[in-house]
Image (tube, rainbow, N blue to C red; front, side, top):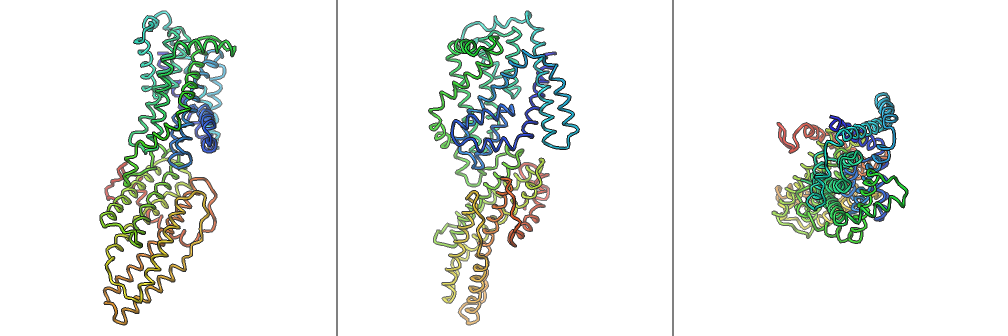
Length: 572
């Protein structure tokens, strides 16, 4: 019962401590992560530091995937952070070995729980309350360790694991498998390692068998990444694969070199003048073989990154599937909004390709246009569903206000795709000689505006351009006047005049809506990166806000619908 209760307290403490630290220091740690990975060594150190602070390699992995999806980190930089994250997770073993076996736990754990919960309950400051939760979790964590020690001490002399351990490879594989299974069941390598350390410190588990279980726990932690990658974006799958490769290669190397590693750690303990007890030995062993893994994979990192870039490309090649909308980011509003912005930028590229194709010589067949239209509709629906998922969580006010704009932007691109198909259907219409040159110039200027808008959606931290809206309106009015004049002279039938005026209006709408959507994406980037919004919003920004408010009803419907976006009223 002590073992069961101790494990429960340990996992509860880890949960409280990790959640509290993520909330209280999350933004600062994410900024460190984004800024400190410009070289591989800095990436390893920042991954190690942040994982040590939040005591959760899973949280760092999720943030890592988010940064890659948002374009803030390259895949190579993210892989380096993964190396460091694996090294940082070994700090749990050091905490257990230093505090759990050499300090009167109750003397500091109980006050920590009391003070922490006092801060949690009575603090109006969200960050201070989160720090209180982390402090309480820290105390519960070590109470769990204390109960695990008592539980294993009670089994000492009653259970002889040395007989099971033996010395053969089969017995060693048994303990590796036990470590893997414990980690998979608890979904926490820290829990498996804490149990292993306390069992060894209580004399239940032989040292070599314990080392094999630590290796197994290190391999078993890849199950979290593997589960998270199912149905995820290509970048998430690449990151999960990098995590699995590192842990499996490291574990296999540690097993092959186990006798040499055990002897080396024993020498290292003496050289560092550390306690030579089995718990400290295992903590140092865990750190040592993770460093060994980094040393082994360091020269092959570039090759591994290039290999990963060539994998999982099926979803990217299918333009109807989202590339950036990773569900693991929904709990991190800033990263989720940045992922939305990148997906909308992806839709912008498809819409621009369709519109430019029908306005210039880049002709696309009706079949290609219909395929592009289906892709845009599918991606727009995915954006709507993703917004619905985000709205089910707690969001900062700025992010909550920005979500209807994201829906409005996706509608602009969907509308433009429909306009492109309509323009293509009028491709054979006869244009009076008086209006031909003006129509050609008008199309050219519309294409130029589409290119400028597309460039704004792709570039980071670019100044918002000044759009010459009056010039486009002037060209449209001039073209319309010449078309109507040709009709009054009898050079074109009334039906043809009406179709030509509608064609000119559709071209103008395409250019204006691409411009408005680009302005909206510019504002979304400011919100996602916590930049102060400009107080000067032109009439088109106001129009986008109005368009977004109309779209808000759909977003609210999605937020209470199922994950597939189906509702009683049906999708619009």
